[in-house]
Image 1 (cartoon, rainbow, N blue to C red):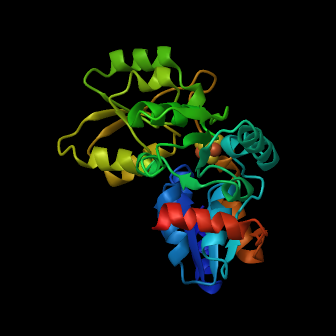
Image 2 (cartoon, helix red, strand yellow):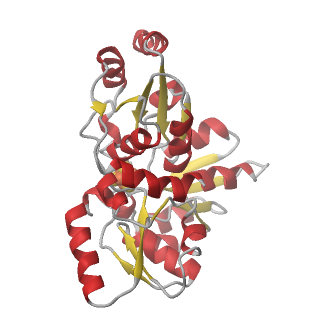
Amino acid sequence: MLDLVQEIQHLKKEKNATILAHYYQEGDIQDLADFTGDSLKLARAAARVETETIVFCGVHFMAETAKMLNPRKRVLLPDLKAGCSLAESCPAKKLQRYQEMLRENGRRFQTVTYINSTAAVKALSDWVVTSGNAEEIIRRVPVDNEILFVPDRHLGQYLQEVTGRPMILWDGACIVHEIFSVRDLLELKKKVPGGITIAHPECPANIREHSDFIGGTEAMLKLVAEYAEPRDFLVATEANMLWQLQSKFPRHRYHPVPGISCACNKCPHMALNTLEKLRDCLASGTPEITWEPEFARAREVVERSLLN
Ligand code: SF4
């Protein structure tokens, strides 16, 4: 293992590469990264990378976003098959047909798209949001326009509640956040009295309503930092986030909220990236995310929404 880590560090220097890793990657990958973060923080970091190569340890749509924001860089993704159930739930052609149908029916609307979507879908959108900036962007949509929110219906529902804006919701969901078990959460609360439940807004309403705090991964880190004395946190998001919480704020105790069908709640797409594949992609310079025609329009939307 040590040899592999040293090999990656050596290759990173030799190939003049920057490693970006999402909080949902295994701890050993996050440990090797130059930057860790949620989708928003990593998109902003990718735009500023100066080395020749970016290795994106995350999923496909994140690497696409890095490429569109910093097109002159070579962007590598250790496993090209690392997808996302949310991005897959909203194919661009289907979204385009739906938008046309709404227009034909005289509906005036703007499309607000969660960053967990393909570049082709971002290109069909007015705004791109993350869990960190969604409320702020939604307040920018003129009130005489309806909002078509894609692709996460749970995040959309949550945003309807906090902004008071009714939305047309696409029927997508994250396979990781959708399967938290309410029964197990309530059991865990009994076992950990005084614990603070923190949940990602991709969780369904039945989990959110039993939570003390709802926010994306950056918001979770900010919240936990505010507690000076050791506390117990019950965490309803992808399980590798516990590694990030533990390494930044080891004074607290963290308890993963279990899922219905799986005790660990790890994202199978993120898990496709391994240290071995990270080493191999640095060594070979593949698989690479190449520029696609739709990136130009998607980039305009992403820049307006996330970088300004
Ligand atoms: S955790 Fe969910 S939203 Fe995130 S990459 Fe995996 S499937 Fe997609």
